Image (cartoon, rainbow, N blue to C red; front, side, top):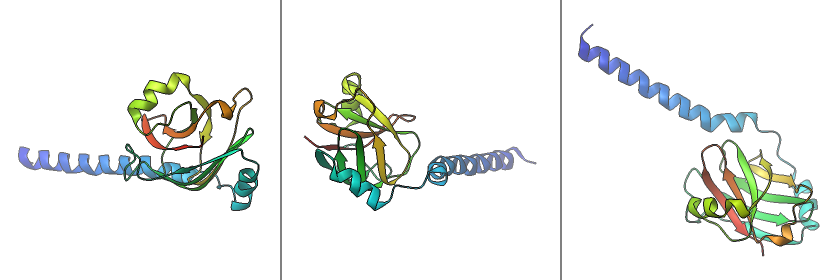
Length: 158
């Protein structure tokens, strides 16, 4: 086998392997996601919420792979979302004392934020607020991809 053919074969297989790996990272969270909460469950949580906000696709660091849209409701016991998130791995829900729409701002404020919990569904979610976290002390809710350090979306509720 000639060196040129070997290099082309190696490069083409490397590219296909990288595309397969990237596709797996994107598809795996979708395949292993638990069932999303029903609209009735989300609506019941939203009815007892003290605050509401809106996830929007047009935030500064949102893009085609990192976005959220829909209504988010924040209460003392739970945070619910009726809408959609771009699928991805290791999403975390944070409460922030300031509105954030960039990775830089998230990292600057992270020490002042409260980690609420994991977001494991992409069509609606319902996350319990842990004991000791008071949503009234914050103004915004943020979805963040912990593994890749990516801003997904945020909403100001107060």
